[in-house]
Length: 236
Image 1 (cartoon, one colour):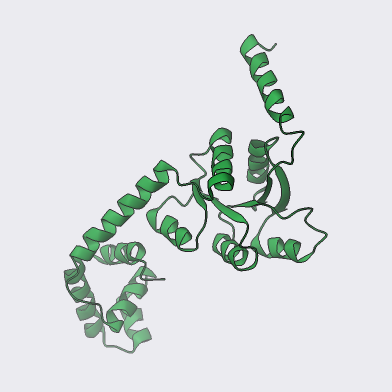
Image 2 (spheres, rainbow, N blue to C red; image 1 turned 120 degrees about the vertical axis):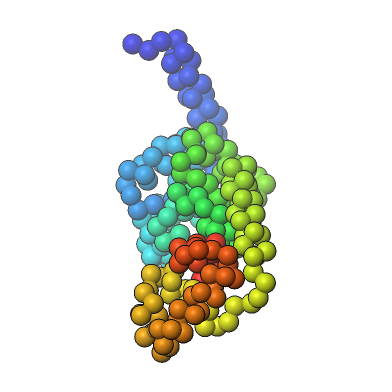
């Protein structure tokens, strides 16, 4: 049996939904490959927005856009999750630049945030942080203001910038092309012998290059070099 608070909340939700019935609801697209997560996002947005596009990946999304009968109306905002995220964003920006893009992801590291903002996404959100209320708020902010930049994302990005600044302070010399190649291969978990074979170098030369990198970066192991590769964006 429902208590009075539950009854009041139910009435409030019904009133909120009814308030949209006389106007055109903002239109939303969702790119998500897991049915349960798709349903969860759909439920969070139910009543406040009209979902006009649902796709499990970039290829299907593009196919729907190319078929004029597959989409009732072009979405004003598309929510993109991990699946094909960069591919989706690049295609939308090139072919449907009027559509606002919200990234909803579990990639909560500074580099991912910077990489997406380089592509001019309008909002970056963490799946682990957003409730129905905050997701709706983010969409409305993007529609009304053109972007939404939550404080917790700003904090992650600032911490990432500080880490990069510290790393850059430690680097007094530019990297040679050989050093960059070796760093990338260390990140990809090549052994010293494999690096030597692939770059046509002697094992001693590879060891000397790695020792030079350890000194430049002021780290003590290959793990430190790999971390620098991740944080520096050297793979871009």
